[in-house]
Image (tube, rainbow, N blue to C red):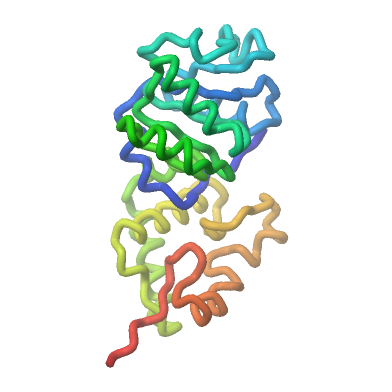
Length: 237
C-alpha cells in the first residue's frame, strides 16, 4: 500500500521515540492494503525491530507473530503502537500493566484516543501519544534543515508579509509545519498542504496546495489557518 507519510500534528513527539529500537505493534495486519501493515513495514525499513501481535496470523513480514502480549519478551516493550478501536485501548493498557509489560511509549495511531488508558499508563511513567501517525512523526522528525527547508521558510515569510499575515510565532510549531511542507515537496514535487489529506492526483489536490484555498477564511475566523503556519497579526492596544 502506498502511504503518505507527510506531516501531521504531534510531530514534536519524535523526541520520545528517537531513543528506542523495539516497536511492539498490537493489531499488526498481514494484509498489505492496510495501514496496520504499511506503517509497521515503514518502521522496519527505517531500522526498527518490529514485533507483531495478532491472534489470527502466523507470519507477517516473514517473521513469526505473537498471539498475545504475554508471548512478547519483556525487553521488547520500548514502544507499543496500537491499531485497535479507541474503545478497546483501555483494556490493552490494563493487559500491559497486568502482564508487567509497561513500555516507554504507548502510541495510539490516527483517530484513536482513550483518556482512561492514557491516565492509567501515565501514572506508571509511560509517555502516551494519542491520535497521531508514528510514521508521519518519524518523517517530520528526520527532515534535514537544508537549502530546501530554508527556501520554503523564506517563501512562506514572503507570502505572509505580502498578505498582511505573520508566521506562527512559536518556533517549534513553525519548524514542524515547514518540515511537513519540505517533506511534501521532496516526495511529490510540490508543496501540498501539510494538514489535509491528499489524493495524490495533482488536479484534485490543487486546492490543498499551500497556501490552501481555505486559509484566509480560517485566519479571519480563528486568527490562524488550520496547520497554524499563518496567523493574523496581533492588534495594538
